[in-house]
Amino acid sequence: MDILDIIFPKTCFGCGKKGTYLCAACLAKESLEMQICPICFKASISGKTHPSCRRPLGLDGLYSLWGYKRGVRKAILTMKYRFAFDIAGELSSHAAESLGSGFNPFPKKALLVPIPVYKDRKNWRGFNQAEEVGKRLASLMKWDFSSKLLIKDKKTLAQTGLSREQRRLNLSGAFTLKENHFPFNRPVILFDDVWTTGSTLKEACSVLKQKGVKKVRGLTLCRG
Ligand SMILES: [Zn+2]
Image (tube, rainbow, N blue to C red; front, side, top):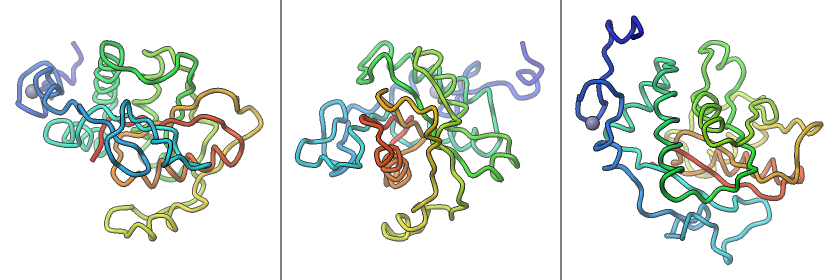
């Protein structure tokens, strides 16, 4: 047992049950039965983009595991603001379990690319939650992983409270792809913790596709 388990005993963020950050019952409550098309947000089987919604630089699909509510939401917020690696570990195991036992729309030879944070921010925290969960999840799913290929080199405002147009402008030019070693023919999974309006994943996807990546699907732990 870790010393931290004695000082801060693990309890479920949903119901307070001991020994875990998210118990099976609380997680099952948030399980998303419906997936959506990332363009029109209407129901879509396995989160695939509808043929009529397809856009040249758009996501080919979006898959999210849980609703951004109650215990799951608390777990994600706590991980983010307390830089908690152990919560990242538990969330990635739950995600891998869900993808392994239930529906998994992703190809085996995929490359998982986490949404990056601006380097100052990462240095200050030493922690990018999408990278920490994504790295562990990729390893459990036997996907390749790289946090070095897509970088964020523009400081942006928090997206909360911005209009759709402001969000787009805020993120415009924020991401850069390191092209030298990019496996362009590999299906890419762009990974983030939460999908709210989708502007971040959409912007990152358009950068990947402009540079020639053929297939890009989104994966998020939660959908807000
Ligand atoms: Zn619980």
